[in-house]
Amino acid sequence: MSETTKKDVYGLLSEPFPQEMERTLNKGGTNLTYIPVSEVINRLNKVLGADSWSFIVVKCERDAIDPDFVVAHVRIDYKTSESGVISRDGIGGQKIKRTKQGSIVDLGDEFKGAISDALKKAAQTMGVGLYLARSDEAIEIEQAMDAPVDESVQIWENFVGLSKGLDESKRAQLNELWAKMSNNAPKPRKPSDATLAQLNELQAEAVRLSFQK
Image 1 (cartoon, rainbow, N blue to C red):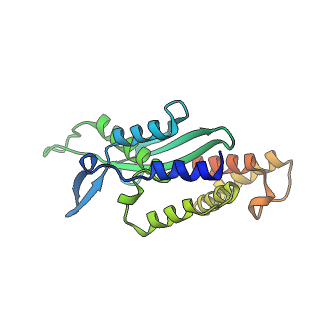
Image 2: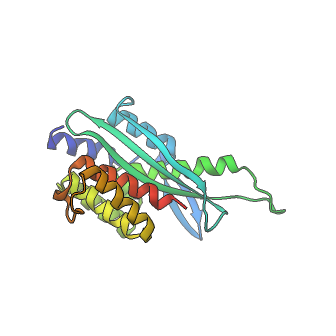
């Protein structure tokens, strides 16, 4: 995919939705505008092609710290002719609704809602509905996507950020994986110290370990 084509795809993905597709949710006294997940999927199908992208639910479970929340991790994979598979991750959540008596209304709906939220957040990193997220973090994501940054640098930064949140035993597991992959080469200190395939594997393992109890 040429650089011009990449910019065209991002422009189509990030194009604002018609106002009639937008929905409003009152959360904590603040009205938040969002796009239904069906419209997000439709945008991905139209721009990327229904046979060129897919998503998997990496994990979806009740939160270990606060069981009243369901947390989901979703990964979007987009197949390109030149760059291979491009992956984007999203983490979403849903608060479990209960009756006045304290019974759970429908746990299945909460799991579905958490997955939809995670899918939309993964799509947001590709530009879909990003204009609705008015936080500083969303602006930084948009700026980063506009800048011509090497893919290995992005994966390295994701990996470093994830590994910092791991305890010593989980970091040791990452070290063991690296030793096995690299034939006991010194630990990487920068993106160029590893191949793109190795960086992808390290990032995937860091994500898995971060969700491991």
